Amino acid sequence: MISIPNDIQLHDKTIQFLESSQKMLIGGEWVSAKSGATFPTLNPANGELLAEIPLADTTDVNAAVSAARKAFDSIWLPKITPAKRASLIWKLTELMKRDLQVFMELETLDNGKPLNKAKYDVLGAINHFRYYSGWATKIEGATIPVSSNKLVYTKKEALGVVGLIVPWNFPLMMCAWKLAPALACGNCCILKPAEQTPLTALYLGKLIQEAGFPDGVVNIVTGPGTPTGEAITSHMDIDKVSFTGSTIVGRKIMAAAAQSNLKKVSLELGGKSPNVIFDDADLKAVMKGVHWSSFYNTGQECTLGSRLYVHRKVYDQVLEGLKVNAQKLTLANGLTSPDLGPMVSEKQMNTVLDYIASGQEEGAELITGGARATGELSNGYFIPPTIFSHNDDQLKIVQEEIFGPVVSVSPFEDFEEIVHRANDTRYGLAAAVWTKDISKAHRFANACKAGTVWINAYDLFDPAVPFGGYKESGIGKEMGKSAIDLYTQEKAVWVAL
Ligand code: NAP
Ligand code: MG
Image (cartoon, rainbow, N blue to C red; front, side):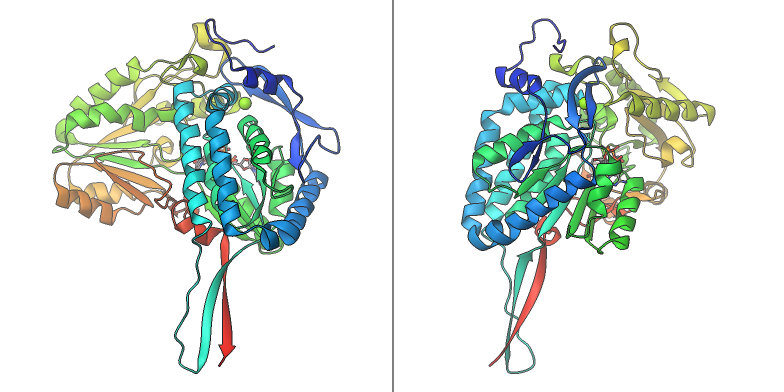
């Protein structure tokens, strides 16, 4: 029996799901790993075991790929029309809405995030499937006028079998970002959730079956990067791998693709996003949002505004306001809907604590936070919001992605300087600028080497808007029309007239 805070009542379906033995979805069957191996998934709020999960190796991944290939060749491509694909994806969204509370609870238990924030994630995932349900019937080719008496038309065709590897920070939402366009485009999928957070992906598998997707169209294999992830990335019969995670693993995935069948690769990787506040910004709006852009999801967010640059004229004021707001953020077991939950794992917590130590050793000034939470929270992996003030962009905490509730704040003087400093990173996922001067805002957006720029806002997303990194933050754009290109290939057909 799992322990939950007083006054919290879990949904019957959540309890039932947690009490059932966990299996993977391969070819429409719920199965254990062939080897019988399992691994634990824990509740990071208290370190307790939530479930034992099958640990897939090459044998299991091979079985999943065979099932996906068979479904692609025999049913999904030849027999299911785009309109039918659309209606299956739409049906899935209705089932997800029905089980909203269950998804929220499983996400909170497995990942640690506050229940009310898990709700945004689940609703976001539902919206994503809805949006791509609409796309299934609108994937068109073109006719191309050529310089001879020929008819040329193009088709956008599904790739075939795609491997989808997702991280633990937004577990269900990341599944949706990949599954929704992959399915809308007509592919069959091998989904691998992160080992820390497999539960919502497995629950989604139940609803995929209930919605009526043919067996083998979606297969869900669970396990760590080695061996499960590697069995996917090195597989000779997977046509594409779509990966979200760290830049380090992204490199390994490209190498595995290159050394196997040159499968296509798209990557959503890390970030170290600059959040720039000019002295003419609406400081009220800044103070309302800057603690969220610095600490949302306990900092475990690829777009986190982890490098905060504040014009010298308002530096003290903003730093003080940020400190006061950060100290007000509540930390607790996510089921009680605090502002922030724990780090996802002990390992991630220790990584973040090491970065905090390095910030102190390298001479950054610690403004608040800086140590693991104690007392009632000491069983879980809690780190309070941590702020460093500094004048040196070469510090490790300023250059490397920490993926925790740590923000580095530094003053700047002028536009040219801050553009240079904002871009002084190997990452290029996102950036934000706060100013009332619209021409300055657009000049900054123009100069910024990042895939997304927010002006007087932070962390806005919509399924219709492309998202993805410049530089070492990734290859390819997810979301919007762009994701259709990620999951299709173009064929040109020539006709002699
Ligand atoms: P990670 O260690 O790179 O893992 C991501 C996924 O890859 C997990 O499912 C992981 O499996 C798997 N994996 C690990 N090694 C692998 C290998 N050799 N071959 C194939 N798969 C492998 O990242 P994470 O720690 O889960 O997530 C944090 C990172 O993700 C951060 O760097 C963050 O910026 C990035 N991220 C980026 C975005 C974005 O959209 N750009 C969004 C969210 C997160 P196991 O964990 O089960 O071993
Ligand atoms: Mg977990």
